[in-house]
Length: 155
Image (cartoon, rainbow, N blue to C red; front, side, top):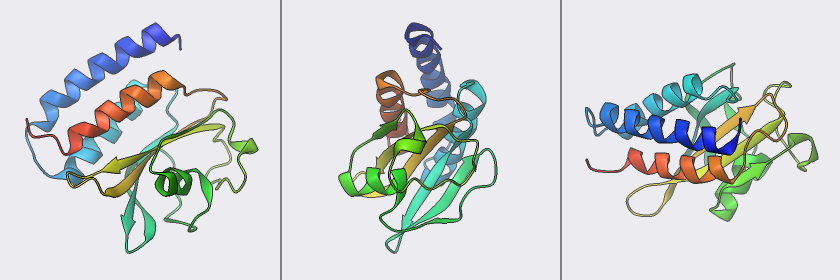
């Protein structure tokens, strides 16, 4: 998808999510809604979800798409890279990432972003896979970073 078209779609999604998320202050409910809307509105999203940080483990949380890995091996893969560096990871081709965890062999590119709570602590990793190579770029990173802030935002 062309960047301008992608930016416009993300802007519309953000506004839609703002109107949906005012109905609850529950972070888990907000995560589930964000996954559902993004997954069904962004045609390059193959798997869309959260891995929750629980007792030092990344365990699957709300998601949309094929069956997910239930728990990710510690310090391995793109989600752990985002957690350990406290920064997004945009991966054009998952096959060139050392230690990539293939929960589904159809995944070709991936973006992961840490989710910070109001205290600035990482509580989850937002993970999106695509069945297309080079599906994600800076446009996705900026828009998804902004969207994730809706989880703990008081409207």
